[in-house]
Image (cartoon, rainbow, N blue to C red; front, side, top):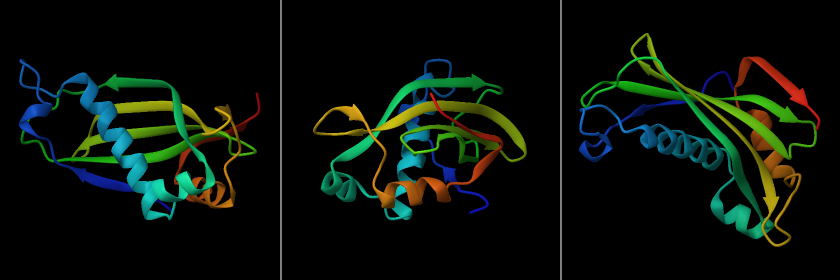
Length: 145
């Protein structure tokens, strides 16, 4: 898959008193897009429940480049930036665009956990297949630690 992006519709409730997006909304938009990607590729919450695994995040970081305001026409993408060879850990990056202007970059680091043992685990085949299908950043790398 070359690209996975979507148009973003902001709500008035996404704004702060300075009339731009509240900082936490960036993270919510990224989480929704990651789940949209997983679900559109067959990795639904029902499948994760069935196989007793799910994603967790260890770190989220937003780099704010340009002010975003209510009414802006925005798009956001998601790309895989890092991956452990057994698919248990991952890094993902989002870009938030207003036309050709980059407004924000969101980086996340996470893993899959066994929801019964509460331990990091490699996902079943559907999970690894879905993650492998995610578009990758230009600086994508595998890591083991």
